[in-house]
Length: 314
Image 1 (cartoon, rainbow, N blue to C red):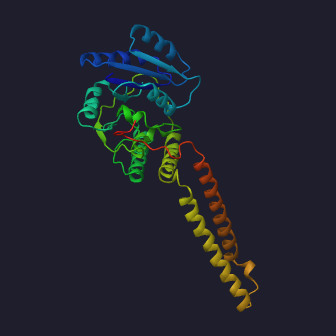
Image 2 (spheres, rainbow, N blue to C red):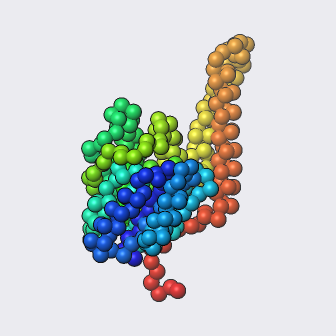
Image 3 (cartoon, one colour):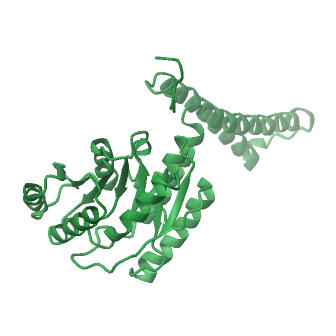
């Protein structure tokens, strides 16, 4: 199969017929064998009934329905599991992503040999204050921490080699960081393409201001996990040791001052409480490192290495 198009949706009953017809026209005109995987993330309108009707008229349209709203990451993850196409393309269901971008995205994967191509909505029709400006800050932070120089990490229009989507797990709110997950899994040929951003035709946005706060928290999580996920003691042990020895040094100084300088007021000094606090923090971090190591060593994925190919080994 040439293409799998994964579309997470939540209350998009109005846009689905137009979107699927548009994709069908593009795929037919380029003679692609394709599938459209519509993942209903617990919609409360008639979206699932629309998906069922569309599937009856076009066998290439498939559907997955969640019992409740789990979020975009869960929807993409299930769509990736079901995808069978050589190239997997994701897009939003609100018609703000243009299916006319599909042929060029596929060409970049097949001919230019990219593992992942991310869309860049260079000209946006969103609110400049509530969405565009915070998005610029978020993308700048993501570039600085990940070393991946994309302008728009959160663009829903992306293309992947099949091997990429089968090698990553998207959870929580990590759909924003799929390029980071892909790089972490060893896929380093990551490209970018300027894509058309269309004004919303139906409904309203499903994301509020809290997505930016969650985005930065997820960025901190993935940065930590990517570096220390299988060796947590290297983080907790290092800083725990530093804090403990800092507190020990303060304690020795105060003890020497009491014995040799007859300074009996050490308990009234801020350094006394700083010494106690840093020693306690150091011990707690060290113990946290030990617990994290036990968890990591008992994880079934502790030695899960991605092997690209084997030669002479069955």
